[in-house]
Image (cartoon, rainbow, N blue to C red):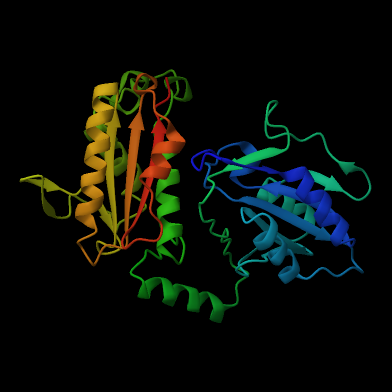
Length: 330
C-alpha cells in the first residue's frame, strides 16, 4: 500500500449500513464543500440526517459510527428546523426543515420512501470520495444566533483566550482558522472569464499573477478589509544567512502564513528546499502555533499535489505545519 495514495470512501456503502443500523432515519442530505466538489483531500463529508417524528436516533451513536468506520463523515442530526453536530454540538437553524435544507443548499442522497438518488461526486468516482490517508478531520462548526447567550459567550471567551479573531468569528481553534484562511486563498485567484467584460479587470494583475509578491498582495487586498488583525511582514527572521520578512501573521503571531509561486521544474526544486528550511526554522519559535505554507503553481511545474502536501504537513509538531498547493487557473 502506498501511504501517499488517497484513501477512498464509498459513501453509498456507508449510508446503506447507517440506515440499516438506525431504522428511524427518513432522509440523508449532503452539504458543504463535498456537495459541490469545492473541498480538498482534507475536507470532511457533512451529512444532514432527518429522523421520523416518532423515531429516536442518538447523536452519540452516529458520532461513534463515524469514529469507528469513516472519520471524514460529520453527521448533523436534524431536529425540526435545527441541525446539531453529533461531534461538537454546534448548530445551525431555520424556521422549518425545508428552510434548513435551502439554507444549507443541501443535496438529497437517500430517503426511506424512494431509496438512493442519482447523486454522484463525479462520473468517474460515482459515490466514492477521497481523503488523505492519515489526515485528521475537524468537525464542521456551524454557530448561529440560536446558540444560547451563555454558550456563545463561552465560545467567544475561549476563542479570545486563544488570541484568535472573534470579529469575524473564524472558529475556536487554530486548525479551524487556518482552514478558513486556506479557503480564502484557494478562491481569490479567478479566471479572466469569472470577471465582467467591462473595465480593465481582465487585463489586471489579479488574474495575471507573475510572482509570489502578486500572490501576497492579492491575499492582502482580499483578506485585510474583513480581517483587521492580519499583519503583513510583521517581523524579520534571519534565515539562510540573510534577513527575511515573514509574509503574514495572525492571532498575535501564533499563525504564520507563507506564500510561494512555482512556474517551472527548476523553481519547484528551489521552493521544496526552501519549505524544508522554513519548517525547521519556525519550529524553534515557541510562540508560533501553526505555519501555513500556500504554494501557488502552474501546470508546467507538474506537481504531485498529494505527495507534496503529505510530505510537508505535520499536524502533531509544535508548531503544526500545514502545506496546501493551489493551482492557478488558466
